[in-house]
Each structure stands twice: as C-alpha cells, then as structure tokens.
Image (cartoon, rainbow, N blue to C red; front, side, top):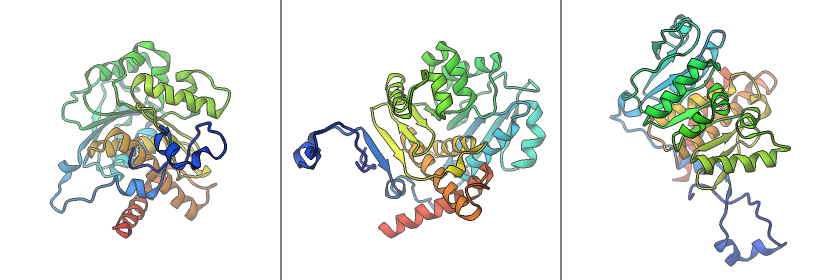
Length: 316
C-alpha cells in the first residue's frame, strides 16, 4: 500500500540485516504505521458545485429498547463525517428519540417495537452499517443474514452484529467480501476464539481477514486494520480517555459516512480510525482523558478534519 510508510516491521531478521538496502527491497512487508500524511492523501477536496447527493446516502441499522443511544451516536458521527444523506432503520421505540436528537437524519421504523426484525429496500443506499445497540435477538440475526445475501453496497459491522456472526457459522460463511468488522478485543475473541495475549490476537485477526476476505479493525491502543491482502496497519492517534461507552458506535458511524462518499473499504477504515482517534485527542486535550465521553469525539470531528486539511495544504 503506497499510502503507508514502513515504520513498523515485525519480521524476525538477524541483527543488522534490515540495514541492507537489497534486503529491504526484496522483503515483503506486512506491518505499517498510519500517519497524518497518509490520511491527508486519502481525503479529497470538495467540489464547489457538489450537492448532498454527491456525498452519498448511508443506511444505519441500529438500536433496540434501552440501547437507542448507540443509534444516536452512530448516526451523528455518520453525518459529521460528511455523508450527504442518512437513513436510520430503528425499532419503533426509538422513533421519537432519534427524530428529536438528530433532525438531519431520516428515520425508517421497524414493525417491531423493541428490536430489528425486517430489512427495507436497499438499492438506494451507497453504504450500510449495522450493529450498534441491535441486541442478539433471533429475528435480528435473520435480518443480518438477509442483508448479507442481498446487499451489494460496502458494509461496516460492529457490536452485536459481530456477536451474532460469532454465534452462527452460516453468517460467517455468508459474510460479503470486503466487509469491515470493528471488534474490540472481547468481541474478536468471541469471533475467533480466546487468545493468550495481544500478539496472538493480532495474528488471528490478520488470518481471519485473509480467510474471510474482509477488513478487521481490531480496536484498542494503536488500533490495527487487518486487510484481506495480508497487510496490518497500526493507527497512531487516540488515547485511553476513549475507552468509554459509545466510542465504538462513533467509529462505526464515521466509517459508514466515509463509505457513503465512495471511499474504498481500506481507505474508509484507515481514515475513519485516524480521524476518530484525532478527534479523541483534541477532546482529551480540552476536557481531560478522565472526563471524555463519546459525544465529545463527535463534537471534535470538525477540528480533526481541519487539522488534516491544514496538513494537506502545508504539504502542497
């Protein structure tokens, strides 16, 4: 990947071998570090004559009774990341909450009061996200399988969508190629089996991405983006203050919004994770790591974009 610099290399080579330029040129590199310059080259300048249709229509499938907040956070983050249009498909219990909290979003109401049970027509959407707060009801699992069979758009899967996949081999087998999964360590262990340490978990994530031809965004300090072509990219932004409820829902929304704007799954993952962490760093600098909440990340996404745009302008 030309956008990523080869600053992290885990190959076991004899001491001093890597200094040899011929060895460097001939060795296949699997591990990379993502920096500001990489992200600046990913994010395009907006056309003066663009309109909301230019920036895509995202579908977010989220929420269940008691977890409508996850849908709110993901929806706000999606719009703040630049999507032109957003429709949120939610259980009936969340209608008033979302209509009040996010007037910019369109709402599609499920026929069930408390959880997701059906899937609407998908053709008008440019990207689809599912998982935040949906729960693990059997009917919701059926919706996920239906989505896998019918969606042609890029997908981002988080939270309970990952938990449902972990429980059902049929869902794992039906997972569309190039889907983006965003598990934290516990969710990934449910998906791929318990690991003794972080390095073992990372290796499993890389293997899982290749086996299923998808992207695994393994969240944590230095979040790792594992790709279908055996690459692993470590993010350089973020802080411990982001270890707070709803932070993952925000990341899902950001990636969903970038996918709607025709970012590739790889670039949406790289830019989404970087911007998420950068917004968290800005928020922590203002409020402290201890006081940071997920909404603070959303509120600082604009400043994160401005920092990247400034870096891009300085580099020209």
